[in-house]
Each structure stands twice: as structure tokens, then as C-alpha cells.
Length: 130
Length: 131
Image (cartoon, rainbow over all chains, first blue to last red):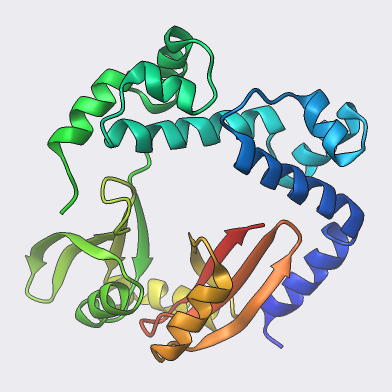
């Protein structure tokens, strides 16, 4: 067994022993993945996994290092880049990824990517991959 | 400051280019000759050509400590770096049928699934899928 294999085994036993908790966070992440485009909140997510919302928040952060909200926001931004590249309008993109206000979407987008959706789209159109 | 490049030490740049593009599916982005036997050589993910570049760096050939470090990591089975994939099992099967050797078969590690292969240029590389 290599050093790396024994380390994997050690970490698995130290961190990933509680299958019930793993099922909860993995289930929650998958639920977010397939429902990112609708209004999601912690109440809904915790109801769906039958756990208290504060417990779910702690668990998700413990295993993924991010809160469900941070994860959801990142996922929406990533998806919005794909839509913008395809030429979808900024307002359409905003609603298609589950955000509610095109104005705050633009601000958030710029905050995360360094460009406004309009700038991003313009640039993407001029540098189409081969 | 922006993170644009990750570098991977390779023993042979030409061989590395052929492995990273031919087997793994990256595409060549920058290729600039720097001296007789080394180039500034980067590849990018085919689906994310404006994303981070992987620099295939000939350090083990030119700098002895780099070679020593690379070999120590390799012998311990430790991945030099990791790449994201959508499905570890599928990628594992695709690469095995292309003749790539794995030191760790697809294994679940809590919230991720991983596998580790030999890049034939002196490194173990891990692929990872979020569960």
C-alpha cells in the first residue's frame, strides 16, 4: 500500500464515517443542482431532508466548506455564463438561473467574475473557442 | 492578482503534450520555444478554453531538486494535482481502454469520488467528481 493510499484510508475513517450525514448533504447538493433555477431556501431544503435548518446548514458547511446559499450562488453564476455565451439576454439569463432581479444579478456577476454580464457576453462573442 | 496557470513538471514535453492532448483530451493553447530543448507549453480544457492553463514544465530535466521532489511524490502515490470530471467511473473506463494505468481505482471519499492514474511523465494525477 502506498503512503497516499494509507492516508486516504486514515482520512476516510476520521472524517467520512457517518454515512447518514453524508447522505443528507449529498442529497441536498443534488437537490440544489436540479432545482437551482427556482426559489430555494433553507426551510425548503431542510424540509426535504427531514432535518432542522440549522443542522443542515452546519452539516453542509462541514462537508463542502460552503453554505448551501454560497454553493447555490456559485452554481447560478456558472450556469449564467453558459447562457450568456449562447447569446441569451441578460434579463432572460437572470430569471433562467433563478435570480429575481436583473439589477442585483448584474452587480453580483461583476463582483464574482470581474465583468458585468454585458461585458462578459461581448468578450465571449469575440473569443469563440475553436 | 489572478490565478491563470497551474504547472505540472514533466520529464519530456513532447511526450507530455501527446499524453495530455491525445489521451486526456486537453487542447494545446500556447507553445513558445525558449531554448533548444524547452518550450513554454500550455494546454487547456477543451470545454473551457478561456479557463486555467496547465503548464507542462520541463523542470525535472533542468533542476535536480525538482526531479527528486517529483520522484518522491510519485513513489508515495501522491497526486501532483487533480482535475475535475463529471463522472469518474466513465472517465476511468475510457482511460483504461486507452492504455492508461491507474494506481487507485474509482473510490468514494465521503462527498467525492476519486481515482489516480500515471501520466507517464513522472506524475500521479487524480481525477475527482463531486457526489
